[in-house]
Amino acid sequence: MTAGGTAGLPPAPSHGGRRLAFPDALRGLAALWVVLFHFGAGRQLSQLQAALPDALDRAIFGAGHFGVPIFFVLSGFVIALSIGDDAVDAGYVGRFALRRAIRLDLPYWGAIAIGVAALEFKRAVTGAANVPTVTVGQVVAHMFYLQEFLGLPGINPVFWTLTNEVQFYLLFCILLGLAHTLRRAPEDRRSQHALFALAAVAAVAWPLVRWLHVRGLAMANWHGFLLGAFVAWSLSGTMRTRWFAAFAAAMTGVWVLTGDSFTLVCVLTATGMLLVGRAGHLGDWCDTAPLQFLGRVSYSLYLLHVPVSGAAFHVLRPLLAGTAARELLAMVLVLAVNLAVAQLFWWGVERPSTALARRLRKR
Image (tube, rainbow, N blue to C red; front, side):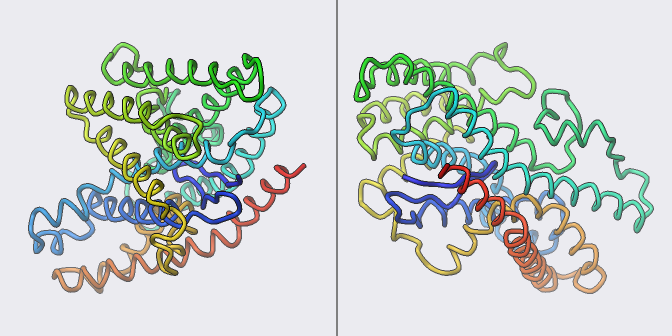
């Protein structure tokens, strides 16, 4: 089993050398949904949104933040699939962390640099006094995913999800490593089942117990990642599906108690992935060129769309503002610019990073 890796969005996964088109298309659509959400949150398309029925406006522009729980579920699915039956020891965790760093950090650091440059350009062009100044300490904290722990302002509003992803990856590998250490035989999975049963209990409890919440700690969203991993294990036979069903039911109960729609989207995404996998269509559903292109560039799109969209709307607003039709055209053009920039960034930064991480995996 092989797969790449990202933060915020999981990579194009494969199983037995066969690309899994459905998860890849799903992450691309989730990334696009987040882009549209930020269009709406930035009030860039107010006339267009006012012209839409309320339900359609909410679905397209108001609910796009639900792309994030989709990302978390897909991340857990892909990492569990990627590790498979590998023997996880201290050396493996170290190599895994190095591969993640190469695969995640180089595009992420590039996005940090672009974000800082965009803020400086905005200040120079608009002369706005409310454009935040980015400090060296803020940049360094972002580079090591510490900005949430330190309570520093985000250079880009999407970067908080990457701090969560890094914690998920490391915790998952540490638990697997401990499980493998406790095994009495290679086929003995009792320690893995026991440890991840405890992890599931913690995932259920964390959203319910407010005093457990620590600034910057990703455990409040751990259930999304874990649901995705349990789907992968259910499909591979590592875990009985009834245990996934029990965990999904428990998280549904958390949603009932808290009203947190984030949790519900995690459960629905994971359940949908399991059903598609059981039907044998992870590899062929949504295997169309536009959706696979969107999936391929989704990490780059996710990282860069906020500064790119801000610049593009700034240029187009004098020409294409004032009516719903003009704003619709502006939206299409800004989306096209975002996709073009994402493709260039994927080709120049993300693809080489992925290739280097894969070479390290083979050693």
